[in-house]
Each structure stands twice: as structure tokens, then as C-alpha cells.
Length: 463
View 1 (cartoon, rainbow, N blue to C red):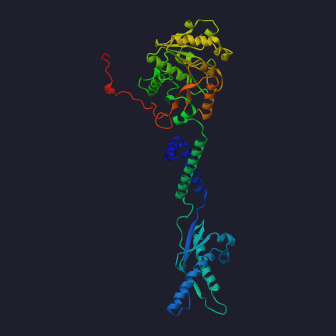
View 2: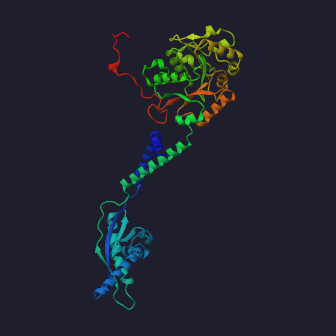
């Protein structure tokens, strides 16, 4: 993944990353709040040699002290010192537990030892630090006194008594919260990358073009108002969705341009991808462009065209196929004289048999001779065979693919269903793409391009 991929991932998965960051911050805050504060008190000791009579001996003694300081730092962390402090102060604590509270350090090339004791009680921390320092002075005297001698060669002296700490050294709230945020964001990014890797839904035109042997002829951007206003006739003339269908109408003309009468099936892989609203709006856009169009409701299982266009649904395609009504009498007109509709009629028990019958083939032939473009709203390809049967009798299928929902496998299987009956997709319509930027069809209409108010003609000027 390059930088652009991560930026795209951040835009699409920002909520996951943010939730993980806030969650880890909350956990860090909780752990910090529940952690007992620890106070640290330190005392400093000076290590020196005794009995030096000249500069050479003093220099040798200084080097010897430097070597000893490193060993003394380890001794201060041991249980021997802790045991003496426990005995001296009569503490109700084991030497091992006390030793875990003691730490010692020395600066490079110095003979200064710093002993630090941490404890939940600041006063107790100071008492313990002083006790450790004093006990260590005596301990060094014992260790460094040669057998038969009364004076130690190395002496430790307390130069700074322990002070009373006023602020705890742990927990460090700001550090913990910052680490929690960084860790949370890192986990969020990892989860986002994992989701992106495992996500097989189609989110880019490039991905879609590799799956379908047909061009993408339109991209319909996502519109939150589409549920309440599914048809473009209820939108402003310059609305992005209206313009997208005009672009789709234009691109459709380049499919088999020499043919004057065309039949297309509008279908999808699964329900819920917007094939019916796409078919209805495409028919409206074609009629507005001067084409003589008929929209056939070929989805006999879940018909919706009559509901969207507010037409009579009790008579229609099935009524004609079983011979109860002539085709001319079943076709309904709309507000646009160039758009006619053949609704589904009553739902039959055997839709697949009706759609592959000779009566259906004759009906399509008759409509082809009468209209410039015949659009058939067909059922989705994967659940049933109806869509593929209709596509085999048409000039091709317009496959509707929903951005972020339709998966790679679903599109691949849909194409295979069409090819299995000798049909093929002749165009792809990428539906519900992001309105601005994102992973969608980058050169689709998602921004709108309405004229300025100043350039609109006034109401009293005749066109």
C-alpha cells in the first residue's frame, strides 16, 4: 500500500481508527486512575578512599573508588541491605519486598551514588531512603575493612539526606494517555488495513473494470434523499443525480450505434443494488432526450416499477403473455408522451416459464419494432434464472453494481450466469458511488453544476 492507499483508508475507515484510539485512551485513563500513586525519595552518597598520602596514591584511590561504585550500585539493590533496614526499623515487610522498592544509580566517571526508594507514602519513602543510605555506609565500612585492620580502605558518606517528595513519580497520567492514544490509533489502523484486505466489496472503477468485460457507462452518486424521491422527475434539473442519468443516457447511445431499435435488460447480481430505480430513471432520461422508450417490468417476483411510477399493476406483462389482453391495451402512458410502461401484471406461479416462452419472444420482437429503446427491468441474476433468460432474448444486459456492497464473487458469478445462456453484459452502471472523491467512479457527476442565480432568465422573459 502506498501513501494514497493509506489516505483513502483513513477517509473510509476513520470511525474504526477513532473508536480504537478513544477506547485505548479510556482504558489508559481507567488503569491510571486505579493505580496507586508511588512517591520517590533519594539520598546521595560519596565514595572515597582513605589513607592516601600523596597525589599518586590519591589518583589510584580515585580510580579504585570509581570501580567500586559500580559494584555498590548492585549491592544496594540486593536483599542484604534490605534485611538490615527491616531489622533496624522493625518493618512488617520482607527483605525481598523492600529490595524491590530500592534502586541505585551512578553517573559516569563519578563516585556519587544515588539511592532511591519508592513507596505509596511520601513520608515513609523519605524514612526508608535515609535508612538505606545510613545502613549502606555501615555496610561498606564492614566490607572494605581488611582483616586485622581497624580502618576501611573505602568509605561511603551521605552527602544529601533524602527529601520529602511532593508529587508522585507514577502513574504519569499524560504519558499513559499519550501512549494509549498512539497504541489505539496503531491498532485502529491495523484493524482498518485488515478489514480492507478481507473486504471483497467493489469500491473502485478500476476493480470493477477487471471483473466485467464491458465498459462502465455510468456512475450514480449516493443521494440520501433517493429513498424519499427515487425518480429524477422529482429533482431539480441540475441535481447531481439527474445529471448522472443524462450522462448514462449519452453513453448508452454508443452501444451498438448502428442499430436503430435496441432492447436492453437492466439487472444486478442480488436484490438491493438499485436496478429498478436505475431502469426507471434511465427510461425517464431517454424519453426526455427524445427517444421513444418503453419500460417493461420483467421482474415478476418483486415488481416495483408500477409503484414508483404510480401506475396500474393488476394488468400488464403476465396478462398479455397468457392471452387475456392485447399488448396495445396493456401498455400504459405516462406524463411524458415518449415514455410508455408495461407493468408486470398479477404475480404468476411460474415466472421463469413465462419469460422463456415463445409468447415473450414475440412480445419483445413486437416492442423492438415499435420503440427506439426497450428497457426490461429484470430480476437479479444470482437468486433466480429469470434475468439471464431475459438477457438472452435482448441485445445485452446493463449490470447494476452497488458501490461498497456488491462483492467480487457476486459480480463474477453474475457475468458467468449471463455467458452461460449466450448473453453478455454490454455496460455496467456503478450505483451509489461516493458523491465527492472517495473510491468511486472518479469522473462521475457528484458535485452538481447548476447555473448561477444571476445567469438564470427572469420569469418575464420569454424563451
